[in-house]
Image (cartoon, rainbow, N blue to C red):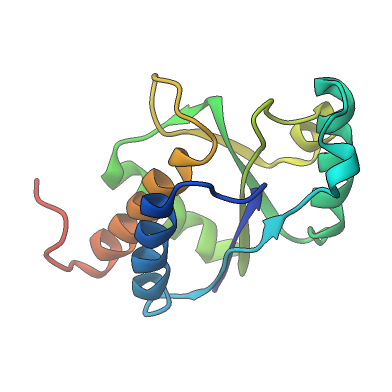
Length: 156
């Protein structure tokens, strides 16, 4: 099983980068894991929000294969408890070998990405920056694998 975590834009907070690195190292124990960045050329960063999202979506879609299961981290998505998220992951891996999670840029996703997505996942009713949510997601992904494996990280 493989998980790809596509991230639009670089992280500018050192504490997020170091936290993500900790969980990325831990996740490699459970699955093949990759977390590439989608980086727009500087000249495109000054585009209006709609055009920026469209440019980001073109780059995202190039990284996705037709058989991939695409899950957007989106405030309008389904909400799970940690245990329910672990169960969701486990069910996905029964039928699919590659899950692609995507965190969008500051303005969210273009409609073409919503159309391609298989699922949308919300990590909270609160709004987080697209950079900070990376760390929150990585911790929850690691937690899900420890729940699936029956390891003591998660307490209930």
